[in-house]
Amino acid sequence: DIENAYKKTFLPEMSEKCEVLQYSAREAQDSKKAVEDIEYLKFDKGPWLKQDNRTLYHLRLLVQDKFEVLNYTSIPIFLPEVTIGAHQTDRVLHQFREVPADQEHRWVSLLSSPRGSLFSEWSVLGEGS
Image 1: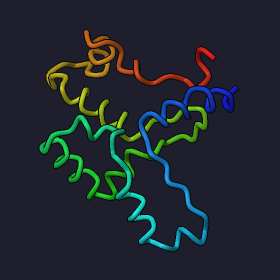
Image 2: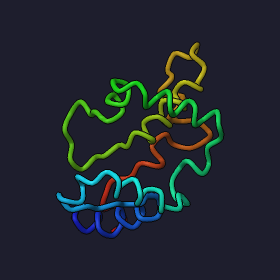
Image 3: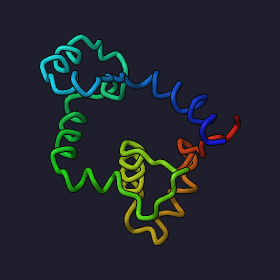
Protein backbone atom coordinates (compact mmCIF):
# COMPACT_ATOMS: atom_id res chain seq x y z
CA ASP A 1 0.00 0.00 0.00
CA ILE A 2 1.60 3.23 -1.20
CA GLU A 3 -0.02 5.42 1.46
CA ASN A 4 1.34 3.36 4.36
CA ALA A 5 4.78 3.17 2.75
CA TYR A 6 4.72 6.94 2.31
CA LYS A 7 3.83 7.49 5.97
CA LYS A 8 6.15 4.82 7.42
CA THR A 9 9.15 5.10 5.10
CA PHE A 10 9.30 8.32 3.09
CA LEU A 11 8.15 10.91 5.64
CA PRO A 12 10.41 9.75 8.51
CA GLU A 13 13.39 9.66 6.14
CA MET A 14 12.64 13.15 4.83
CA SER A 15 12.19 14.54 8.35
CA GLU A 16 15.79 13.48 9.04
CA LYS A 17 17.08 15.26 5.93
CA CYS A 18 14.76 18.24 5.45
CA GLU A 19 13.15 21.19 7.16
CA VAL A 20 9.58 22.02 6.19
CA LEU A 21 8.16 25.51 6.51
CA GLN A 22 4.40 25.63 6.18
CA TYR A 23 2.37 28.81 5.74
CA SER A 24 -1.26 29.71 5.28
CA ALA A 25 -2.30 31.72 2.20
CA ARG A 26 -2.13 34.96 4.18
CA GLU A 27 1.28 34.18 5.73
CA ALA A 28 2.72 33.17 2.36
CA GLN A 29 2.32 36.73 1.11
CA ASP A 30 4.63 38.04 3.86
CA SER A 31 8.10 37.42 2.44
CA LYS A 32 9.79 39.00 5.47
CA LYS A 33 8.29 36.33 7.73
CA ALA A 34 9.58 33.56 5.43
CA VAL A 35 13.08 35.08 5.35
CA GLU A 36 13.03 35.43 9.14
CA ASP A 37 11.97 31.78 9.53
CA ILE A 38 14.75 30.65 7.19
CA GLU A 39 17.28 32.64 9.24
CA TYR A 40 16.15 30.78 12.39
CA LEU A 41 16.81 27.37 10.83
CA LYS A 42 19.95 25.68 12.13
CA PHE A 43 20.81 24.05 8.77
CA ASP A 44 22.05 20.92 10.52
CA LYS A 45 20.28 18.70 7.99
CA GLY A 46 20.75 18.16 4.31
CA PRO A 47 23.46 17.35 1.82
CA TRP A 48 25.24 20.72 2.07
CA LEU A 49 26.96 19.65 5.31
CA LYS A 50 29.15 17.33 3.23
CA GLN A 51 29.90 19.97 0.59
CA ASP A 52 33.06 21.99 0.15
CA ASN A 53 33.49 25.21 -1.84
CA ARG A 54 34.15 23.36 -5.09
CA THR A 55 31.04 21.16 -4.93
CA LEU A 56 28.88 24.10 -3.85
CA TYR A 57 30.21 26.07 -6.83
CA HIS A 58 29.25 23.27 -9.23
CA LEU A 59 25.84 22.93 -7.58
CA ARG A 60 25.27 26.68 -8.00
CA LEU A 61 26.24 26.44 -11.68
CA LEU A 62 23.81 23.56 -12.11
CA VAL A 63 20.82 25.31 -10.54
CA GLN A 64 21.45 28.53 -12.45
CA ASP A 65 20.59 26.75 -15.69
CA LYS A 66 16.81 26.40 -15.33
CA PHE A 67 16.43 24.13 -18.35
CA GLU A 68 19.08 21.74 -17.00
CA VAL A 69 17.27 21.63 -13.65
CA LEU A 70 14.05 20.74 -15.45
CA ASN A 71 15.81 17.82 -17.14
CA TYR A 72 16.50 16.31 -13.72
CA THR A 73 12.87 16.52 -12.66
CA SER A 74 11.15 15.30 -15.81
CA ILE A 75 10.34 11.64 -16.32
CA PRO A 76 9.33 10.78 -19.91
CA ILE A 77 6.56 8.41 -18.80
CA PHE A 78 4.28 9.21 -15.88
CA LEU A 79 4.70 6.51 -13.23
CA PRO A 80 3.27 7.70 -9.90
CA GLU A 81 4.89 4.87 -7.90
CA VAL A 82 8.39 5.68 -9.14
CA THR A 83 10.02 8.88 -7.93
CA ILE A 84 13.59 9.74 -8.81
CA GLY A 85 14.93 12.85 -7.17
CA ALA A 86 17.27 15.36 -8.75
CA HIS A 87 20.16 14.49 -6.42
CA GLN A 88 19.81 10.79 -7.23
CA THR A 89 19.76 11.53 -10.94
CA ASP A 90 22.83 13.75 -10.64
CA ARG A 91 24.66 11.02 -8.68
CA VAL A 92 23.82 8.44 -11.38
CA LEU A 93 25.00 10.81 -14.12
CA HIS A 94 28.34 11.32 -12.35
CA GLN A 95 28.76 7.56 -11.89
CA PHE A 96 28.00 7.08 -15.59
CA ARG A 97 30.58 9.69 -16.59
CA GLU A 98 33.24 8.03 -14.40
CA VAL A 99 33.04 4.83 -16.46
CA PRO A 100 35.69 4.96 -19.22
CA ALA A 101 34.15 6.17 -22.49
CA ASP A 102 36.02 3.61 -24.57
CA GLN A 103 33.98 0.75 -23.11
CA GLU A 104 31.27 -0.48 -25.45
CA HIS A 105 28.64 -1.11 -22.84
CA ARG A 106 28.87 1.73 -20.32
CA TRP A 107 25.55 0.94 -18.65
CA VAL A 108 26.33 -2.77 -18.26
CA SER A 109 29.69 -1.86 -16.76
CA LEU A 110 28.06 0.61 -14.39
CA LEU A 111 25.37 -1.83 -13.30
CA SER A 112 27.97 -4.48 -12.48
CA SER A 113 30.49 -2.10 -10.91
CA PRO A 114 32.33 -3.13 -7.73
CA ARG A 115 30.67 -0.22 -5.91
CA GLY A 116 27.41 -2.13 -6.04
CA SER A 117 24.32 -1.78 -8.07
CA LEU A 118 23.55 1.53 -9.69
CA PHE A 119 20.07 1.40 -8.24
CA SER A 120 21.04 0.34 -4.72
CA GLU A 121 19.76 3.62 -3.28
CA TRP A 122 16.50 3.50 -5.19
CA SER A 123 13.79 1.40 -3.68
CA VAL A 124 10.17 0.88 -4.52
CA LEU A 125 7.85 2.45 -1.97
CA GLY A 126 6.23 -0.19 0.15
CA GLU A 127 9.10 -2.64 -0.09
CA GLY A 128 9.66 -4.29 3.27
CA SER A 129 6.57 -2.81 4.93
